[in-house]
Length: 475
Image: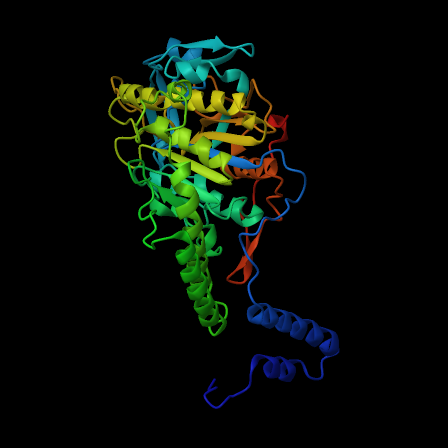
């Protein structure tokens, strides 16, 4: 078909195709109204995407602290006790798939490296790998029936953060920022404290097709957590005048280039950066924290690195209105990926155990745990079996793993779901990553099916076309 000479627009084409049809008047009116609405939306000045938005229904949580252990923490060595796995160590076990490859595989069961015992009034069993977190079990809801869709680090990390295991999508922090807006305009609504990049890189805090202002701001532990926080202008008043002048030029520039989300995001980032120069230095200054508070996190005065610093900063940022704070432990190397030796979990656990317990205790004594949701997770668990009888490590295991929730709206001092007698497969109340995300959004007052964004001709959401709220874990 040669259409080189056609100069008709979409409206004219629709009219020519439908002329004479019995449904023409109503269908044409509907199509043209939709087209007019889209055109008006493109022409209208963009509303402030960071303005606070009401939740879909009353929220239990105002903010989230998301603790992510990169590499795959072994569930059978931490939060999922398996007495029979201890008893049957070394026995053969058959599986129909191993590390993403289908087939008949004969494996050898491997006992956990750490002993389990009950803790707290709830009697929740936790291994000696996490003695400090074990002391907080009465504040936790441990989910022992988590499962995902992929056995590789990159895809599993992407899935845990974006709901998509194969294609880059906005991270959960960006979705929360988009759904609720910001509380404090002088700080980003989403911040990720990440000493190293995780397996999926910056995509875990990216906004992708959401407006760029919802992208997470990366914080690096050290003397300068966010570069260039000190203003260059001689005074704040002069800088305000400069920003006001350049803001006017920017808005004029944007008006001539409608529907450019990258440009709009860049302009808003200048405004946020100005506010950050006022508020961020105080937020990152720990000099006024008491010795007792520093001790909760295992910190020395003046220390600016370590997971204890990350946890204390999470509390301070949450206190100052940051909607979603993610802490990433260990990045994509020297992490929880214990192929060679499970004993490498020991120093990693020691690094995070006291700080996480300290964070929970600090939030609780300040009354913040009542409206702060704390999430602890990893991308998958580790196999309760190995190909060799004397293997010291464990492989990737997305069939089953453990996560926990604490704080706002969570049924504390409980466990939910169960795996089979060896921790290989989920046996009761499975919780897929999409269900996990739907539950987190629900606690924030967001309906995961209604939190959508139109992109490339369809409505996208964090949970894609799946996910259900796990109401049994709600208080």
